[in-house]
Length: 282
Ligand code: GUN
Image 1: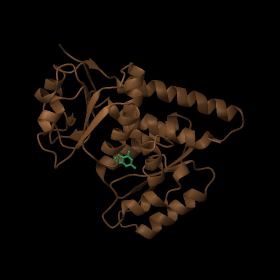
Image 2: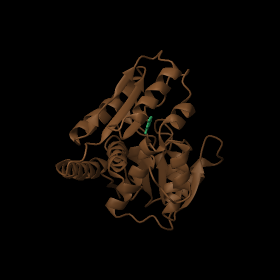
Image 3: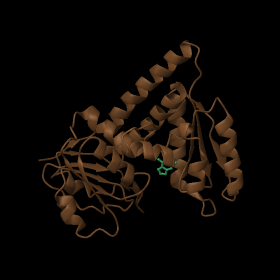
């Protein structure tokens, strides 16, 4: 049997519409439009695509876009000074620095410099700590977008055996916290994990975010499992593929996210949601 598709594209479009309506509503009451600053340092081609997509989504949602593209040789000091300026700017409600940054820039320093109230990526230790102590404020966009997609599709999480493949700060670790907060039993796998195939094969829900094309094989998936593929990898022939071997996995899973059109659009819609929250939170 072929899996049902978790239609991130459609769910994200709905979420963006409701955000647009809320912004119009707030503006008609005399409130400001949410302002989002996306900072890109350098010319990483994948980052350029992400930043362009974020910019388009921002404009469509009625936000003010105050993005800045800086040359690859911009000093760390200058990036920190820009963050200080944006922290102090009342028209800017959200600030993100697209990662990875060039090697001479320390991402930890950047993340800690952003005012936690404007940290719409949810990467600042304050916001990660809030999520870990079940008092979420600003949650990282990709894992939170996954949770929204599951909730809107009507898939209950409580009691599921979940396996997260990848333990990054952007995906794996906050995904663990999100799933745990919804009462799943969670195993996080990474490059030192033994018997990965076996662990994946026991999962009712698998979330994969490793950035390696088709790393999780389709025949590892337990029949009836839910498969969430966070990966998006451009192949030499131009094709986009996920971190899961889709064609085989979809014959075993009950639900699966397509690549593209699954998790990616949810990440961007969640960024807008976080920025709107930052703008109108009293
Ligand atoms: N690079 C890959 N994903 C992300 C993200 O969600 N936020 C930022 N700032 N950089 C990223």
